[in-house]
Image 1: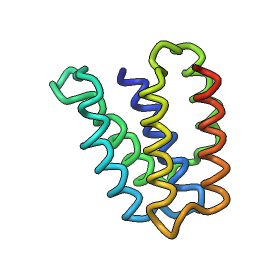
Image 2 (image 1 turned 90 degrees about the vertical axis):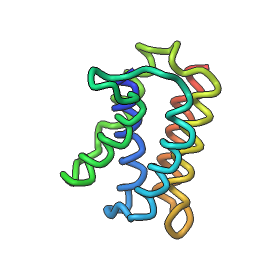
Image 3 (image 1 turned 180 degrees about the horizontal axis):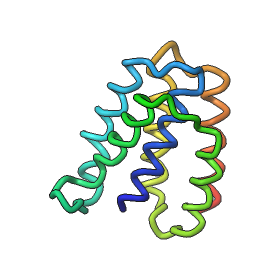
Length: 129
């Protein structure tokens, strides 16, 4: 599950950073959804006893701090999804899209670039159902 959440952190970062600036409100929106929706989703823990869903925030924050290049995020995510289709049930796919849309609309509504990325994400997830 750690790798799953790492991939999600990258995907959500990619959506937030598509306009070259990750806004504070986008970070806050992600943290709110992780806390309220991802943490209760399932209960796996890392070697330190922390809920593995926090990996979404950890990866996202690291990418923001390091101004990471996100060119391969979606192709890597698609490959991961193809190798782990059982993780991508409807409830999870819906939550992934909900989180992506919340990040995209949290600052000045969803722009064209964000809309394209969320649509690409939706196509990847639809392919797994």
